[in-house]
Every structure is written in structure tokens, then in C-alpha cells.
Image (cartoon, rainbow, N blue to C red; front, side, top):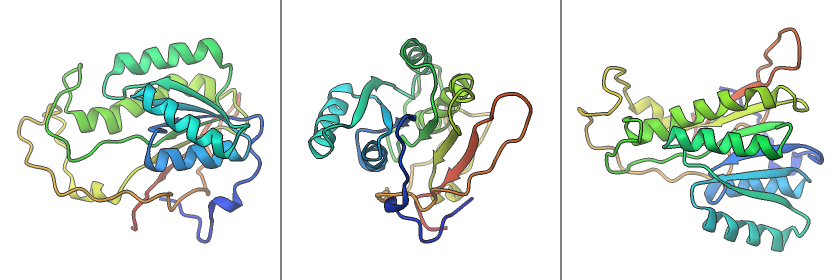
Length: 211
């Protein structure tokens, strides 16, 4: 876990010429991230499950930042087919991605399964983002100073993962929901991945909750 004490959104530098993919960009933390990146000149692909809601949020952001370069695209992380379709469509229009922000997530929802038969929270919060990251890696390696950021929560300490029961057939009721904050406590200090060939994306796991 990496933190940047004292860092605020005001410290964000100019992002002109860079392309960002932000999951869950139509609400909460995702909207805040999108707002700040767009205000600093970055192009943001708003990867959202509900494109109508995404379009409304885009319109609101453009009222505050008329020159904001925002693109709304549908992505349902619960369904791996949707993940593949999102990446295929993105590759037709975008040559490089400079940063991927894995922000979307669900919690304390009734038990249901993904189309691939996996419990919905694990499928959405982990497998969907993993598949998205892997599919975008070739595009990210072509980006300028590429980085992958994954937002998580300290609530992971309360969970247990049974790899023999990905459908959560033996799951107990989830704990009461915990509100998510408006900005992650970690925004810099990424680990660098060294290697030969094109620059490799850097990775960071950011916890929006204390600890």
C-alpha cells in the first residue's frame, strides 16, 4: 500500500494528451476522479454500466468544464463478455491508453451469479477488473508513462475467499454497508515494473479507507 501524505487534487499536473479509462465514472469516487482529470486536460473514457446515467454525468461535468474531453462507453464488469466487447470497441477508436483506473465496485448486495457462474461481488470487483487490465495491457504499454490504479477498501480484512466456492453457495450475510469517501488516500508513489522493450505500466493499489 502506497500513500502520498499531504497530496491533494490541487497537486494534479497538466494531463493534456493523455487518455484515461475510469470504471464506475458515473457516480461517487469515479465521478470525482473523472472531474479532476478532465479539468487538467485529460481525455477520459467513462466506463459505466448505465450509459444514460453516464451521459447525464458527462453533461454536468461539461457545464463546469466546457472543454472536457469525455467519452461514455458501456462496461458491465459482472459479465466478462461485456468486458471483452468494451475493449474491442475501445481498440477500434483509441490507439493508446495512458492510465487505467479500476474504481468501480459493488457491495452488500443480494447474492447473485455472473453469467459465468461466479458470485457477483467477486466477479465485478475482482475478476472483471482483472480481465479488463489484462486485455488493455498491450494498449497501455504504448501509452505515455502508463499506470494502472486499483481502488480498494480496508474492508477486505473482514472477508475470506474460498477458491473452491466461487459461487458463494456457503456465504453468510454481508456486513452493514460502509460509505465510500470522495477521494482516495493514495495517489502517487507507484511501483515501477522494470523490463526490456516498451515502458511497462506501473501498478498501485489504493485504499480509500483509513488503514
